Length: 106
Length: 113
Image (tube, rainbow over all chains, first blue to last red; front, top):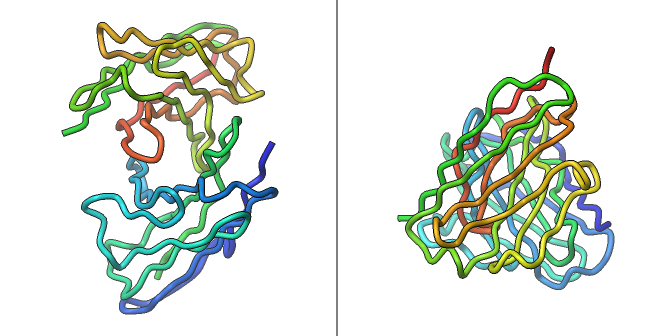
């Protein structure tokens, strides 16, 4: 199975900051990575697919990059509504796997 | 607008069974593979199962293989998850998802005597 790791597991930031979250796959997965945002008590929301493609309606402050084994989610100019937990997920091979999540808080 | 509406969750005793349903609308259901993802209280997301567009191909996490069965009825735009031999560690919110795109609101499964 492909293992997905994320770093950091949590981070503290302030409004206006730019943050970067890293996701690493245990083997090459091309660009078959998605990123999700989840707020407490809510369903996940899809942000990015194919490593760098933004879903319609997702603000351009979110960006993704990477290919192979290393992937990055960047969030610029953090706003209060961006404080949440972020997950990466590989859909290159079954079983699909999620990273453990990165909690972004103040 | 895409909508995925799960139902069927609830309290069940260990060893019991439940069938979850997910009613889909707003997209061509028969054209998309579908998945179930769960989240235990205070934990991260765990992929559970996926099914191909026709239902011919199914995939399961090792933790549920042999106990859970995913299926779909494209005539009813509905996805199912039959869960048997439930254990305490199956307790979670179960999400229906068109992975990388849309998610339902989730349905809570509690396993307790």
